[in-house]
Length: 373
Image (cartoon, rainbow, N blue to C red):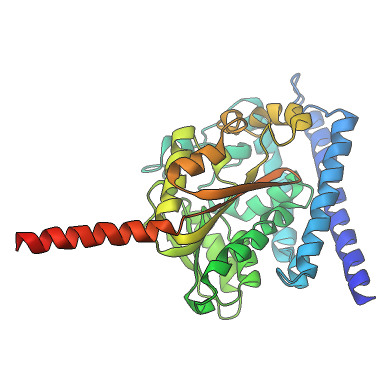
C-alpha cells in the first residue's frame, strides 16, 4: 500500500512540474508577444499528434524512473529531489531574464557576453549563447538559472532523463565487484551544476566522484550543491574535455550528460577519445544526450527547428551523426543504445584486452632496454 501511495505521489509531483512548465511557456510567450511583438515566431506550434506522442514518451520515462527506484537502483527519495530553494529564489529572476533572451533570440545576437566576463582562452565553439542564455555558460547568473530553464524546457523531466544513466552505470561497474566501493572512481565529464553527480552519489554512496567542466561559474554551482551532501568532498576540476587532466586508465567509469549535441563533429570525436583514454580496461562509458533523427523519425519536425529555436549551432549535424561509429573508432566495444523521452543513451565498454596489450608493450620496452644495457 505504501509503495502504491509513493508512486501516486511521485506521478502527481511529476505531473505538477509538467503542467507548470507548460503554463510558464504559454504565459511567457503571450506576454512577450504583447511587450515585444515580432512578425516571426520564435517557437512554432507543433501538430497535435506530435504533442500527443511527446506526452506518451514523457509518461514512459516517468514510469521507467519509478521502476528503477523500486528495483533499488537508487533511493526513492531521489525521485522527489527538487532544488526548491533555488526555485523560489531564482524563478522571479528567470522571468525577468526571459525578456533579454527573447530580444537576443529575435535579433540573432548569438555571441553576446557581459563586459566583465573574460572570454579569453575558451574555444570559439564554446563562446555561444546556447539556448539564448544570458552570458552563455560563463556567468553565475547563467549557472543559477540553468537547472530551472532545463526543467521548464523538458516539462520537469530533466532529472528523470539524467537518472537513466544510473542503471547501466551500476551494471557496468559489476566488472569491478572485487574492488572496495571506496576505490571505485567515476568521472562525470562536463558536469555542469552537479545534478548528475548528485544522482550518482545517491546510487553509489561509497564511490569516489570526480567532475570536470569548462565553466568556472558552473563548477562553483556544482561545488555548492555537492557540498550540501553530508560527508561529500567534491573533486571538481576546471578543464576542457578535449584534454582531460587525468592519467590513462584512471577511472572505472566515465559519464557524460547533454554535451555532445553542443560540440562540433571533430571535437565530439576528440572528447570520446579522451573518455576512452581515462577509462580503465573493462570500464564503462555512459552517454546521455538528445535523441537523433533515427531514434524517433516522427519527431524529426520538432528536431529540425530545435537548433534555431534554442540556438544549438551544432545540433543539425548531431541529428544524423553516427555516435556508435565514433565510439568504435575510439576503441570502445559492446555498444548499446537506449531511448527515453527526448534523450538517447549510449553504453560502451573499454575492452579488457587493452590490459594485455599494455603489458605486452611494457614487456617489449623493458626487454629492449635490457638488451641495450
